[in-house]
Image (cartoon, rainbow, N blue to C red):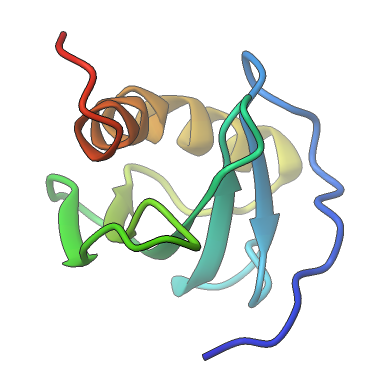
Length: 104
């Protein structure tokens, strides 16, 4: 378990904020988190490659789950990282909605 989270320094994407636990840039895999517009949080285990989002840990009172995600391209620059985050955001929004009992 991690104790505390650094303040996210990446620009929000459509109200969703991403923060790193291990460095995004230059790595092929790592740990991060996402904060929904309502301030709730989920953990992310990410890697470069092909794959669909997978639930690692189910929602609990302090977070709406921990999810494995795959980025389609290496995080070789801040711009590539932003493209990767945008590419997985719809999957994370769907996981958030499921965790909060929202249809659609």
